[in-house]
Length: 300
Image 1 (spheres, helix red, strand yellow):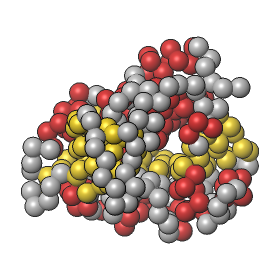
Image 2: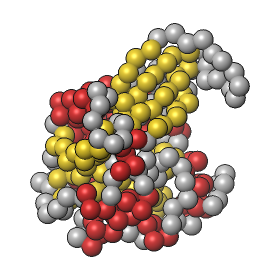
Image 3: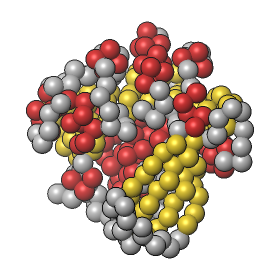
């Protein structure tokens, strides 16, 4: 598995980020401060996290418009060592996300999918040499299921980060090897609210991982519950933290690491990402993750 490629299929956006004292309530106008653009999108963020974590080549299938917004996304992915399979969509704009980032590191995000909505089943490349396929839900769900079905049939490990939160058909769940969700997404998928253990028991996927922010993460695997405490950090921006977790997790598993070790690496990478501004710009290298792990900084 360590010599085989990780394929990420999913979204790529240009993020427009405004910093403000707080996230606006409905009908409220908030005067912001700093403004910047960053390459983002769940798929692209996860591909870069996977590539920077090292251990296996990383490849990404994505759709982009024929506009200036595409260039910084491509440059960010290529500079991180991600091989690209690009579907060009001149009739659609590149995906964008509008993010309000508050002083307490919370955010509110609105996504305009644009070209991401153009990904179709026929765009999936040959899976020869692919060890794992990592998917998210910022592209059409029928396309996500088609990719999962093809990978499952080819014996490729299928990992789904069920974000943004939505219900998932049983037909898609049956194709998964690993499902990664936060607590809100867990409730949406399982139909159980407020009880993580009960919700995990309701999901018929071999491995389910739930991220819980400052409370760390928990995984249900082979009948056991594994818990990984969070790392202590001063949060600056939580945008992309979950994506960093997912990409690092799949890279670690691709290197043949045990699930507990993979969870620990993913948690450390996510913590580092929260201490920096931006999505892709905040994703750490493997060396940075190893340095944090060496401090043994996880909460007891």
